[in-house]
Length: 444
Image (cartoon, rainbow, N blue to C red; front, side, top):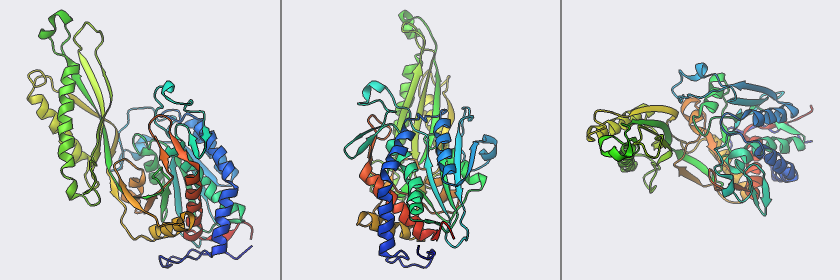
């Protein structure tokens, strides 16, 4: 057993307190525990933690953290506790099973820098099962790939956080600083899970979220708004269709107007750092549509659900005002809609994007850890998707390193994650913990 290894807050970018022998030992310890890590990930995949059904998977995570000696906090998100926060997203669903789990490690002597290891347990709906090669919740390993809903996004990342600590424990070490292991929900629809952790008081000097980011660090990402548009029509028998008003056709005209707004927002990309060279950073998606009651009746109603991105720095309230103005103008130019304007309801993400400023001590530490685990320099990139990193960067004064394994088909059929990639990412996280937090022997 070597002596306690202290975190070095003044360490230059190219050097580390970790000697080569310890670095090799940590990476070897990750490899030795990797078969158990894969099995743990498979167990998580078997639990369909879609919205409203997260509790079983969260119970599994809570037991795993408790078995490892962490103090476990498990609670249902209380909307009243977070609705006042500027990062809150509106919801209209029952939060009874919207559970967060946080495991806390506290050292004997707090000599290092604190850390949050965050991941989200919720997954998106799997779609028609017949379009999957294998059932989505029956994890399958084929070559280097682990298949299943949530394999990449992001149950492999949750397992990486847990097993990075296991690797250090296997060598007889634990972090010499407070570490919070977070398994949150609502990342796929509101971001309220990570926000609830922040409001509850969980803060640290840095955070890591091993999202499936192709072994790169996210430099910036967009904000997101979810909204529902409700359109009314005038029902008549189809033989008299001309005397009625078709709500579905009216909805289509509003969709065309929103497409024009999307195009307009994309023309503004030159004003936003890191987004200037992206081909199409602002994406609008019509994710769901319902309408009508009878094939031979002109439909009296139609609703459609949308998701649209925002550039970092754009206040969601300002973006919402533009959306409402777009729909109002489109309705005003339509003979029927002018007298029957659509309604809009915000029912999920109402989240601002963020930029991770370059040069933080946490990023330099990740650069070194990645280089030792992968044998090459860390790259960064910009992603036009939502990430919980915004909670830490915008509201927690905390550098959040969103960095994770190579994956494929997330949110699609036959989702999969590379096993070799997740092993190397786990090694990076373990090395990061060792340098950032420092290490102390588990037993004095």
